Amino acid sequence: MPDTPAIHRKRRRPALLVTAAAATAALVAGFLSLPGAPRAEAAPAVFAHPGVTVSKGQLDFTRGKVNAGAQPWKGAYDQMMASRYADLNRTAKPRATVECGSYSNPNYGCTDEREDAIAAYTNALAWYITRDDRYAKKSIELMDAWSAVIKSHTNSNAPLQTGWAGSSWPKAAEIIKYTYTGTWAGSGRFATMLRDVYLPKVVNGSNSNGNWELSMMEAAVGISVFLEDKASYDKAMATFRTRTAAYVYLASDGALPRTVPSQNLDTTAKVVNYWQGQSTFVTGLTQETCRDFTHTGYGISAIAHIAETSRIQGQDLYGTDVGERLRQALGFHSRYQLGEPAPSWLCGGSLNLGLGPVTEVGYNALHNRLGTAMTNTQRLTEQNRPAGSNNLFVAWETLTHGDNPN
Figure 1 (spheres, one colour):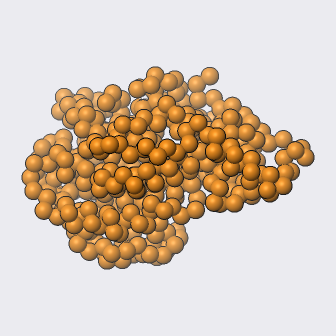
Figure 2 (tube, rainbow, N blue to C red; figure 1 turned 135 degrees about the horizontal axis):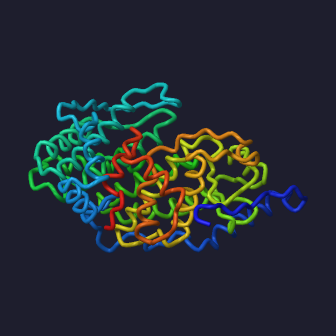
Figure 3 (cartoon, one colour; figure 1 turned 90 degrees about the horizontal axis):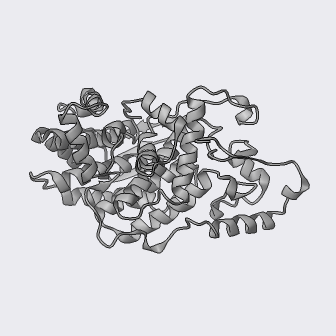
């Protein structure tokens, strides 16, 4: 039945009380045998541009639908243009050091950086659809303002902040560099900013919560495309494949979820604790489901964005375990976001909802392109249209990916 998870419960029996060494060996062996294990040839011989999350074919489809007044794209476009991110009077607020602590304390430039990056992407989309130079120039102005000033990200949330802002900047830059016919004199300096300030902070990962590392890899993959950096692209994609397998559970994984070997989750108790105390594992459950759906949505969205970028670059992951984990995670969480009561075995019967506008990219790829039935995801996606922005790194995906065949 579409979007119905298979249940694999952890039975209370001595067989699961394995030694740390045995658990580690089993988990590592399981990872190494994963059908979608990282491959060295991830980077394309020639990068496609624009090629970060949205392709030229997708942009052309979107532009055609908006200009024809077709729905849901025209409504999504109107929503975007009415947002603060499309304001041509927007003034960038760059800082040399962006300092972001836990729970946004302190917040020195964090919100400004993320939202200026989303605004740069918003104006790039507006330029492509309208061909009004003012929007391209505003996007460039925002990118130039930050590339002239920023030097570092600091404090405990620095890796995540860098990942969020670093996911939006290359989406904007790809559209402007490869479609705008005017001059962008500062493109070289912007590339240097991505290479020196952002990429080193994200490409090596952080060994932190799943949504952190997935967002960091989204930034690393997008930046690598813009910089045409094959080595960094391959490194980020390998980490992404590992993290996705460890973030979304499938029954085929066995009694316990897969883990990232470097995290040393070598006992059942450690795994359960890392999965927010959840000890019953079902297909589609994520490492953060029992934390809240909002953070889970961040992880799901990053998986979809990277898979979409990979597809544009010539390696389609939707038909691999990456796509299956994405499909199951979307379906599982859509059920409960739509109002189905949580059973007692799931997060103690209490869920913190708020998945966010994160279903369009994965739904379009898996349902519309591959023809996979996704009943619950479809209901939630259509119910939430037009999908707006989460004000962090997700923006306007009904516009760019809603029922987009390209």
